[in-house]
Length: 99
Image (cartoon, rainbow, N blue to C red; front, side, top):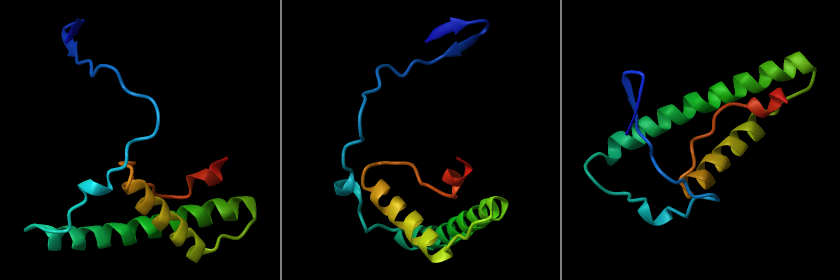
């Protein structure tokens, strides 16, 4: 801990570079909260896909091109499934269309 102007800032130390190690072996499909986790996951997934398609279509209308909602959903779904196997953050929205 370092003291700086009446507040403390915690240091986390060295962060390794590179891709996160695989975490597939840490996924367990059992336990008392599995049903609730599935319900929340399904609802959250539907909302995230809806948001992603809305953002994609908004940027598409601004730049005059078409967005296929089915391809958008498949891309976001695959990205999140593959990313979850390597401890990545969840991806939502078509924010690459900003570039």
